[in-house]
Amino acid sequence: MTQQQQTLSSPAAPNRFRQLPAATADSTLARLMLAFLATAGLFYVNIMPALVSGLIEGRAFSARDAGIIGSCNVYGAAVGAFIAIFLVKKIPWKAASASLLLLLISIDLLSMLLDNPLPMMLLRALHGLTGGLLVGIAFAVMARCGQVHKAFGMLLLVQFGLGGLGVMLLPPLVPLYGSWVLFMALISFSLTALLMLAFLPAYPLVTADPTQLPPPIRYRPLLAAILAIFMFQAANMALYAYIIELGEQAGLSIAIISPALGVSAWLGLLGSVLVIWLSTRLGRAAPVFISIVITAAATYALHYSASASIFWLANLAVGVTWAFSIAYLLGVCAEFDKAGQMAALGGFASKMGLASGPLFAALIIDGGSYSGLINIAVGLLLLAAAVALYPCRILDKAPGADVAPSVK
Image (cartoon, rainbow, N blue to C red; front, top):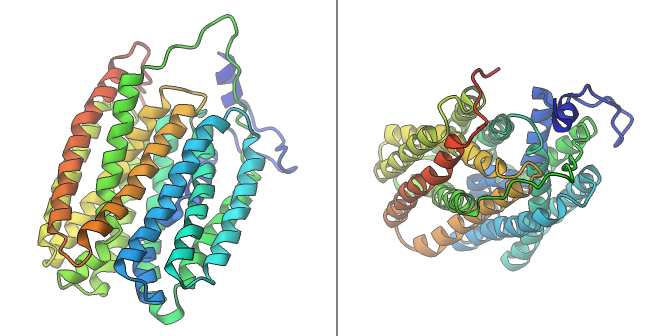
């Protein structure tokens, strides 16, 4: 057993962050708490439709301003994730995570007081920067786990499960109580992650053997994986940010739209569970390619959103395949570097895509229809599927590839 395996599979030791027993490093409980930590910095993405709709309904912001606020939030996160790439090897990740969570809570409290779009854009960009740093750190720690696909599968399990609850419950509450409920939801999640942080193990950075050179990073497949992540996230988020308005323009009521979004996000749990169960049993290339193509087909079906049944089915399909595909794609980046820097780089690409989608959509649909946006999203998804094949095949064919003959 290697030094790294001994570190990751060793029994729980007293937690230095607080004198509390820590979870075993490679346990399902530890993966769950890491998933909460990573989600806390970017939970607003999972409730983006509720956030955009809430700012329009609760604060009378225009659709364009609300979309740009969402983009500012995620662009800030992208910058934070990029900075995290250079910090993950140098900082005590637990102390940094606690500080960032407290700052997130403070910014969300301040956001309740603003009713002007420009200050809100600036403040949410700062929120995104803080959250992006947190997510980048969490991704780097997750990359130190064994069976990294399971860690990212758990991440998507948390994001889609609680995100589904958010998009189902929050939009109807905004007209009754105001948009402050959106920020209270974010604060509650950050507080939960802060409590869980105390029970996480240390996940120390394993020092490489100085007599052995680390394997060189293959930048071509890595860049292909990063590009695929960016296109996939941008295409999905461009529509997801405005999915409530899209449904309403098609003639559907919020009583139909909100449950559809909530259930679709919960079905994302199925996609996450499939990743955890399947792992690399069938490799990566075939599952990722098929899943993204299904996402593209379901996205195209949104042209027919006037039918409540088609709107529901399209969102349900995207819910499953979005979680399934992105967990694999993030895992592909993480496998290039167990120190976690490439995982943080994958997180940066993800956030750039998530930020660019709403911004691009805000510029296209301002005063127009959603048909052109749907077509562009479908094209991006198909291109992402083609690009993702290259890095997935490289890893599938690599000697000693992380292929699990059985998944526990």
